[in-house]
Length: 85
Length: 376
Image (cartoon, rainbow over all chains, first blue to last red; front, side, top):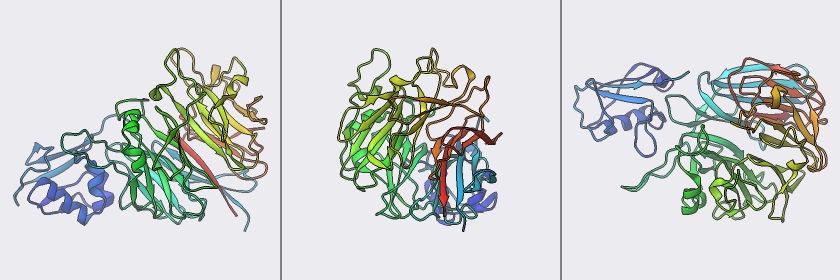
């Protein structure tokens, strides 16, 4: 499936939309990390929590659940959400 | 080749490298590197003179480490940045918020680095900063877990493990400072630790036997005499000469109107009696700015028995500077060059051991750390 990538991660992916596969949100992000090494730890901490200023939307609905099942036609978008200067 | 002098400046919005020759009269900026990244520390490996590590994060992204062996022309990201162990089900796990204090390992252990983090953890790399492992004797010890607090506790920037010191005579002899939690020593490479807080004051009427009340800001070992350590603490300036175990408050010799509050402290590379501090206002609500808006470095040439003001070239008034604990350093030239950076983005230098000062850069972002290196 195509995953939307925030600008802060273009240094890894080189693009705003990239291909990745996975039956769950966690598996999808693991696949992203295989394709773009280091990406996962920038958005998911060592306790498997999304980092404070990263949001993930599946079909337009915010999700923090790495076990959330995905199907091939789901739309996944990662977003950066930062406040302050 | 003539000596090249480098200053590594880590800021809230990126990193810069300033280059000069041995005369240190003119400085050429190289940067920004990592524009927009939060760089807490940028340090050159003194053992090989070419490996540069940058402790980085951004406002959005988690912490990582970048490594360069060509002075920042290209950077590689660490394959396994510092990360706490995954907590067992039902337990609250810790997450590294930022890598704070880089320290190259012993000269006999090339490729070994340490880093202190926030929340307070200690990590070690054995491959030049590419992969990192937690030092279990610190990170997993129940007492240190208690003393370390979590990311919600401590100072506004989070509790920080800092002042990671490797004894140049013994790779297994380590010291660390905890921004809440005291100073600690290990003689077995970090497997076990002994508190070193005797003689250190705590604020007000709090109990100095309670580790969490201790707030060392910066601890330095003297390269010319590794038995001597200096410390700038939240509550005073101290010295200890090992094997003594009690710190002596040498800040009592500072002028009363200046006091002995500050963040950074740096030491002379060849004279263990000489050290410098940058005093700050610790009255009332703790502005932590230059006292009365009149910035100055204070130097001791006699191990802290006396202090002399060094402000020639600095603004005489209305300069409300803050210099953080990693933001002052000394080079190895003779006479020694001194450097400090302010949170208002100015970089200052002295070519004569503090006798006179000049601003070599202005308008940088908030400066976190300043390091120097001399390449022959």
